[in-house]
Image 1 (cartoon, one colour):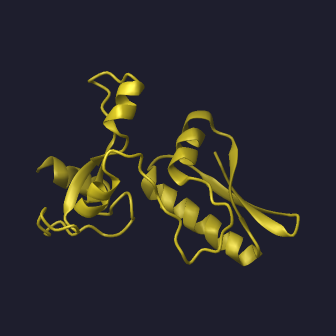
Image 2 (image 1 turned 30 degrees about the vertical axis):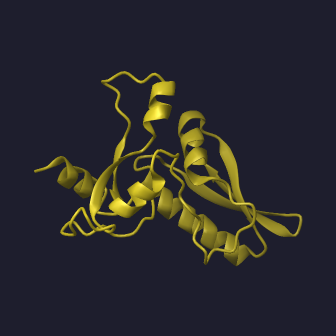
Length: 152
């Protein structure tokens, strides 16, 4: 079994960046093909002075998503169908919660239904983005709006 197959099986053949299915049979010359992506950039790994034994996490990504990200920090976008205000950066927040625990406000919503949908999507998306990281979401009313928070 190749490393790509191992990582693909572990990640459920889903791109960690866009969360869409990756076709294992698509050629690597196609933007929808499979590739292995480092979860953090090489520059950040050097900055953090990781040893060779402690390599950055490798994740499955579409060739197009991986190429589009390039050497930049990865960004996981909030879906357009969620009505959220001031959405927090998902990866940075999840990394911080993984290290420190606690609670972070992720977005504001105008209705409780929108906040519930955003909370549900966040927990579901982060279960694939950070497998093993046990996060919960909470919706709190306040000031005529609803706050969506993640906590560990």
